[in-house]
Image (cartoon, rainbow, N blue to C red; front, side):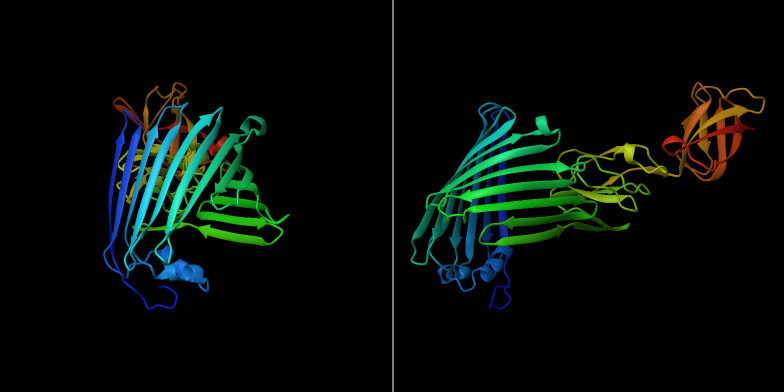
Length: 414
């Protein structure tokens, strides 16, 4: 609801076209928004009506409502050494006022000696009250260089210069990196504005973000002679499904609901901070649509009483979908058991051993008459079968686990 106005309702539709020419490295994107009724407002429109309160220069624009918006992007790859070139453009037409806002951009980027370099130019033409346009050109140069060769961690340094046509050139240097298995993102920046009063153009900033199991937690602090600012943010996602409710990091794009029943606290490969919850569930986002995505569990971080029959699951989501990535687990103790028959002879190599009452639990005896078993209860019965012969083993787990949570035990087959 806009400031000082009644509740409004409206509708819009969007048409999108994209084309990728792999042979030439060309990408083309065209998007058209049409606002079918006057009462349609975006979240940005509503927030802007509060932001400009009391500012007579801009408050008249709060009453402008777009009738359509068109955006265009064309990108061309010139190879590893020549880099990439992108052209962008957009136009916004207004419903209750003649004229439009235009924006154009040209960007080029490449890699140099392990670092990255980009040059950008933008022109914004903004509609004013008298029907004229305010035009501003902004040119920026950005360079980034990894420091991992000297620090041993994922750390990089960057420098950026921004030069608007109306003055106020700024330069900024920064260092950023990751820690704690990429769960912590940090950045330190120092900026300087050329046309600021003496001592007033310097600004220092610190940013921290933690990628947690159940969401993201971040904080910012900036300091200059004129002011100090502090901020904090928290973000996450919720999926309600047939097993209950799963909390995770923000849901962006297409999402996979990871299900590994009983395997809690297991990291999901490729997504920093994403781990299964107490039920063995979690979510991962930003999946590639209409393509095969691999969701992997880290087998080295499985609980002592959990085993998965496969560590990778492949999913193919549609746009904006939530798909299941289900892992089959066996919950219970893990044991390495040495088997012998009543006469003291060894059990033949390749003999099949199953846990009675547990489906899909078959294991094979090795050359030393040992068998690796998972999903065991504190006590139970095994069936040992080779050829036309078979015998049974009654077992009870020892009081203490061995190395890596593995029980070492012997079994007599009768």
